[in-house]
Amino acid sequence: MSKAQIGVYGLGTMGSALALNLAENGVRVAVANRETEWLAPFMEEAGPLASQITPAETLAEFVAAVDAPRTLLFMIPSGAPVDGMIAEIRPLLEEGDTIIDGGNSDFNDTRRRFDDLETSGLHFVGMGVSGGEEGARHGPSMMVGGSDHSWQQLRPMVEAIAAKFNGDPCVAHVGPDGAGHFVKTVHNGIEYADMQIIAEIYGLLRDGEGWDAARIGDLFGEWNDGPLASYLVEITSKILAVGDPDTGVPMVDMILDSAGQKGTGRWTVIEALKLGHSATVIEAAVAARSWSADPEARLRAGKILAGPTETAELPSTETLRAAFLAARVLAHAQGFALLTAASKEFHWSLDLGRIAEIWRAGCIIRSALLDELAAALRAHPGENLALAPSMAELLAKSIGPLRETVAAAALSGLPVPSLASALNWYDSLRRAPGTANLIQAQRDFFGAHGFVRTDRPGATHGPWHQKG
Image (cartoon, rainbow, N blue to C red; front, side, top):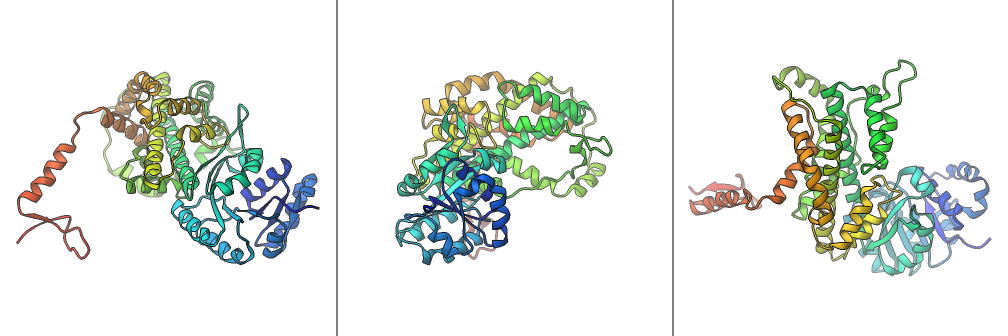
């Protein structure tokens, strides 16, 4: 049997799914795992695809099983495990070999690893993979960062296994070093925002109108046949239809009211601030998950903190649908603005239109809207997405419903942090002048009246301290 074209190290959920996807698409694959006892069950699971797969018990066997120059894909936890694997495998590699990190890694780590390996003639790729287990097995969306050399080796294989949108593979070489992982981070940030917006509308209908889960699920099912069509809306409609088989209670009501997070949404917010930008819709979604982490405190607060004495009538479902669409556009606009800022800062030359195109299928945020966004980004490169004519026209029709929804929610004491943040960002964009002049005047006043800045190493006071 000839040597493998690619090696996949790590046979967890994502690694095993990608290895089988590669084998099914005619790619010869070598596989290895730190726990070698996983190999036999995996080969049994592969069934007829096993003839395309070479299992390796040791790292040396794994490297030797792949044709040079080698392409080796790590599907292991991010952080220290990746650095540890690089240290182990590096002495076994030759000039021209490529290591790919397919996990959710911090792009700063990816840039560091890229630079470190480049000095020894090795190549490092940070590849964002979206779509979960189902996507990995049958067609993910992939965002590849790294050298042109690595891309040429990798391209035929990833294009074969990627999700397709009208025949176009949802994978691209987005830029050098950490570009792939940064784009995946922003993808996940937008995912956080979209999930939160859906949850807020669910909350308005449940707590404001008294709708049960099944009725709300039916509404989301209707919305999924139109401009709001997306993977997240589709699965929400299905989730809300599921009942607990023992009690008949909606399954969603049996789940603890505390949402977890893996950190990529938080990374998006951190990097936005470091770049001098803001991703407030995403930030609100991250904050909402953080607030949810203490449901007991919220239960106590509900008995202590006063709510509104009167409630407002909530908008119609058609108004909520339009508000949802406006907020989704604005969340994406913030994400693409962040990609623009990073592209300039790190000299990546990101093709935003292509990024939107590879998100149209396979990934978690795939939606009908992305085709329109891709067209707008291609027609108006460098423009804030919210200001592209087609998006500005869409917002002109839907911002009124968003304003109505946020106002009614506020008057009724129902939290909608991401919807409100989207509206506030929209209004901040369109206001000229804003309120920054007052902030600057305050800063100037401090400096002119004997105040000195002390926010430097060793300072013991706040940012301003009066002399004497």
